[in-house]
Length: 422
Image (cartoon, rainbow, N blue to C red; front, side):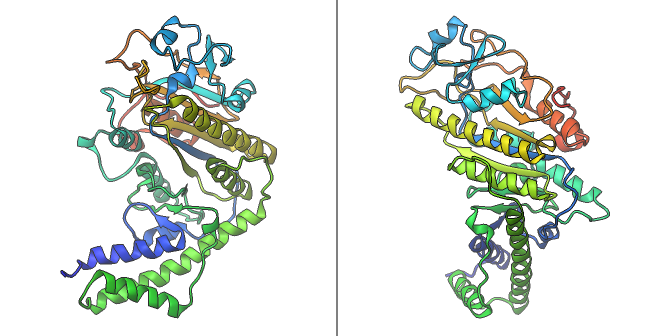
């Protein structure tokens, strides 16, 4: 068996050890991320962005419904939501009946939808389209960082005082960390479950034994002594800092009660953890979670209804919790998907990959409930809704109006910012 390249071997061991701890690191492994891993409590007035990614391509047309457009029922004879069942909202539109919580938030001025969002020459591949949303560029121009990662790099560089020792961002979930969070100089912890906030520390002998077994599995020959020493130094430093980070997060969870009527769903539990960390005063600026399953090619009605219900119930509980704790004014939730679905239903009671779709925001400082007009159901792009709002203009609004930072360096270009936030 050929010996494993020292760098690849080291990266494998580093990732394996961190994965075993329940704390994963996106992008390249580097001790640089530890600079932001020691969690402290400080000024809680800073604004927070919570990103909810609906993976798979949410059917925006059955989420925000043009119930009075005869073309809707014509294009979707089986999948169209009946007007009597839908939840009426302004502009002759309605929400899916599973979105009762969202409808109440919209009525209370705590929810906003932005219609017709997409980008030129849409790509209908899940992976490529999501990468475009994450990086703000097409494959031929793509670099090594995501849009939020570039923002994180800028924040770290600007923090000359180094007063904020909290992790600038956190990803909650067992899936691969979203590329949007990939930075050059900031490593973002990925916490796969609530239980894994409690980092279990092995004894020195157990840890050494595990390391030895992994080394033997990866190579037949002994590696250079310097490489081994570097690896052991890394493990020691990473373990100590991960324990510190986990301890501080656990302390934050104890500091804020578990109250609130959060649903016992995967998204509900993730948002409950985030709500408690925000209430505890962590200086983390970005939280990122994913809800998967929106690739509804067949038997869409029940699956889509269940997913929208999970999102709506979790989001509603999150907003109510932060409103009661006094933290909603400084928190913004952004929900997006990599694309919408085709206007016409398919032969399997489902919908195929589309293009334009709505984006959603929840919070206390929203200028209006509905932004933009619903795309035409007759003026289509190869069977798909045409976008009239570039998603990067929405990102520009988030960056400039919410995070109070210039958008152009983060987005890699100039995009007109929508007026969205007070």
